[in-house]
Image 1 (cartoon, one colour):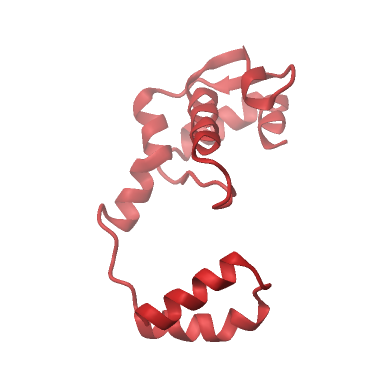
Image 2 (tube, rainbow, N blue to C red; image 1 turned 180 degrees about the vertical axis):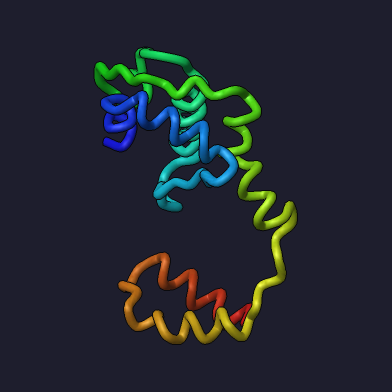
Length: 130
């Protein structure tokens, strides 16, 4: 839906993407249970959308007939959005986990997590690592 909206108001969104390239961070709401090949397909679709100038056929990403109007960003602008801005803000290496804060967070939210494999994994981590 978001990419359709970008396409509908293409001129407005291109200006925003160009102006704020240095501030846009790539993210996805794909869950852990999404297969790796699908996650790669999502990133490929986003890269294609950011790089391609003008209308193009995006059917392979949507599983149905679909055209989008790409942003036509440079390689440098695209990579800045996909990874550069994140690395600039967060660094290249992960920071150490604040185990005390993580333990408090898990204790606070554990009652809200539904039973299942995700909760089991969190409980195991809590017991073994914290």
